[in-house]
Length: 255
Image (cartoon, rainbow, N blue to C red; front, top):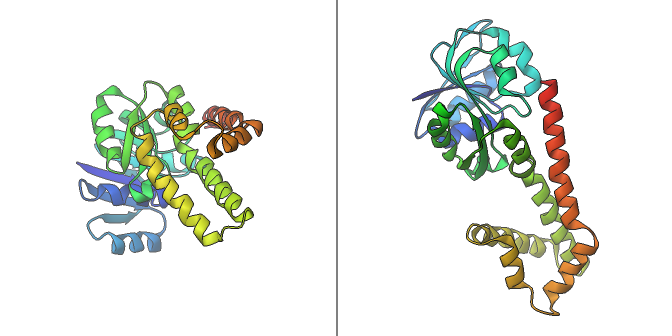
């Protein structure tokens, strides 16, 4: 299958790097120099500066542009694509279909892990494209099909925004160790190793069971965990997901 990327920003690059071994890829963009740089990095692909009118008839389009640029981009795309795979946050299939013609539509939300082929990607849209979409986005990590756009908007607050939340936790743990007298470099190594090991643990065990397995009665973990509860960390995380979901709905209404 040939995939036509529209856009060549950071997310597009991460996707292309994961897909280039399995798909024929062409990339359409506005900046000649950035396209040339991408071509030199990945000589297997083809690149092209977008024209005033670009025929997308019968193509499988991976739409990787900023949501605010869609109203300017859409009039340049003529014809009817076979499929649109959209990575645009907060942009509904209804909005996409009103602006770009295609036989079928998919909404997807990769995360920053795509740059290391470790994205947790959520997907929804036309059932006929389910297997194709899962195959494409499994090339950059793991993917999960959801039954509605509303579920994808909820998931955006977890998997899409999650790297930022986990980055805050990682930074805070390192800062806590430094505050108690550990060297910054050593604290950073500890946190990196912690997250690497935790990824394997969480893949095989329920979080509540993991927590109980670490927490001995009256021990160090119990003391630290009590501090987290006093500071409402659990509630803060739940509120983060809630507010991110609310923002996703707000963006969808605007777009």
